[in-house]
Image (tube, rainbow, N blue to C red):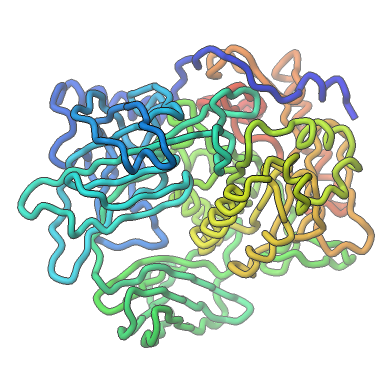
Length: 630
């Protein structure tokens, strides 16, 4: 145990100055394009539809959901107007507050007002509301069609209005939702879309990830409002609502299960090769609101990091047609020839070399400044020799998972943490860091223990459970996701054994890391340890069927002047020169690699990029410097 480093790296929040201006290449390009457009349109506000082409001003091009795509859709990203207003108070003020008479500011959607790319640069406070407004012109639905407005993420609670009438409400900051606005449209006229948002951040125990109003070290800027795509879609009245795709090389088939609006139509499934050639097809008539079609596939082409082969899917139900894709692969924890539990892809042991990926950007915060930016992060991780990204305490936009599917990048997907703030840092950080034995038998289903883990609030536990189950259903069709991570370092942890049972009921096909870090409840498929200050070792109990992973380690810090958003830096070790830092990082990764022979199934190095005060990334925060390879 390196006590000196541990004490120097203690977690803390503090008052800090505003961040320095810092732009990624993609954000800089987006800003420059907007400035040119602004000079041409100054004073005009949003246009008739407010967007700038199908991709919108958010520069997130292509369909927002490549695994569930129809042809009749359009982006509502771009310049909206907005207004901040005092909250009238109450349990859900976003539902009762009067609409402002003026919207004096412009905001670029889908960037939060706290993000530089929004053009606002202002914190939404817990006692305020943020109102958005824009006009839009979508195709008028024909007979039997409906118009949906999709919000892919809004933090945290919102009420949506079309032409001044309530379309619906939603709470929860990380999952997509939509409203059917057909009956609220004004035929032959332009339509107006308004959204009222409230975000209590860490003043209430909702799932919030790593956001804190008073942030610092590993806690990041709290952000609010719309932070993923907004888009419209014209759909048939009787349609496919949800898909579950199970492409099983063991069974030699792909099963497509659909939830539909009304029964009575035929579900038709066509499997296509990567070049679009038909491979197989099948159909079944829906006698209920759910129907499944099994399509046999002999000798399917397997998916993996070296050959990420994707099959196309064309799925029709009555007049509705959706395009999707799938991959044939299995993921599991199985014993190797020596009986050591290993992570296996297609029943073959694969050593996991992972990076912690926070998914933060200096100009967009939780929102990437473009699809190319997302792709560049994935490519950088692969070029640095890693085959896995652990998406940390965040549900990313759907296009990121699609990019990982195409690139063959494996993903460990975290659930979003929450609970009563502030966390008891002695309980969830300092004590388990000092002693592995201190948390080895700490039950998380005892009320007094849940108080110490910030999960005593029943409403929080119920909300976390809903969000966890929603995340699994939302993301389960992506082949890149090979492990679900339920709890991290005890943050809001409770009843992990029950959580594992619920997760397996939704998705029995993937391994589960129930408790990454510490407070192991002897459930799930991994013994998952964080180790920043001790010599790396494998601690696998004799006879255990769970694979041993070091799910966080490293965090060695190097500050690159001119490429950080703060003058100070935070990490788990500092160095006198970049050469010394590189040598230390490479030596630590090599040490972790040698543990494969001793039973280590994989690791996650902290981390892919710098984030705010954290300067322990292999890339700088603005993604302009590859610190390890430069």
